[in-house]
Amino acid sequence: MDNDKKIEYMRYDVRARSQLTSCTQSKKILETGSLSIPLIYRAPYIWYERCICRCIRPGHDVLELAAGTGLHTYIIAQRGARVTASDISSNSLKVISQQIENIYTTAADMESLPFENNSFDIVTVAGSLSYGDPDLVDAEIKRVLRPDGAFLCVDSLNHNPVYKFNRWLQYLRGSRTKSTLLRMPTIRRIESIIKGFKSADIKYFGAVSYLTPFLANIIGQSNSAKISDAVDHVLHVRRSAFKFVLVARGLL
Image (cartoon, helix red, strand yellow):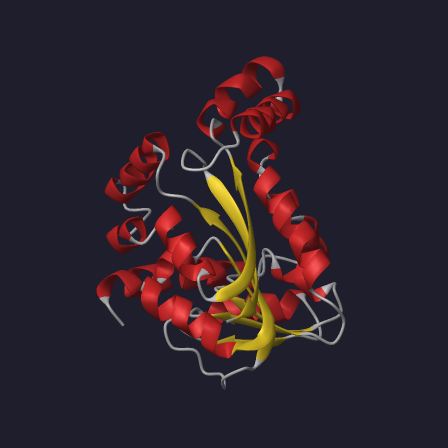
């Protein structure tokens, strides 16, 4: 395990350890998924959940990568599939096991998954593509997917200079590691992923999300979010986006 990975592991494992004795199931479920995201940043997560509802069916074998403490796991589990939540942090998985019934949990590094080839109908990951070597992670996703499977993800994009600057500030403050900055997804990374699939749908969000906290103080979060969404629609935002949602189907 390299030094940055150790730092991230400790960060999330310690955080999860504190949750093990402090959170209850009812409280956790209320804070799950898009509902846990501030309204001004919620649009990509709402779309991600819609994609989950469209793609995941009862009986599907689903792998969630970097599940953390289950922020999005509950939404997936509600679809009636056989869900395996994986994460490098064992304490994070214990939190999931406390909160969500009838799922499997497996401690796993995204760069080297402990699963057989063609094991899953769906692989999902939310906000964590930068936590592993892109070539290794992308290859592992395709390896464990079945030929007619699908890959779903929501993540940040690394082109807009405002967002890049903010992430570097977080790094300087010690809340991010350098490798996660360098591995933040780009259009090129997205294009590399979808080359291995028969079809792909990509939706981009948040060209002006950096303005929404200021607008929210003036016109409220709901109106601020509507303006941000309208800008994305009018501009057909892509490289300037804050977030993206990718659904790729059918391995080549």
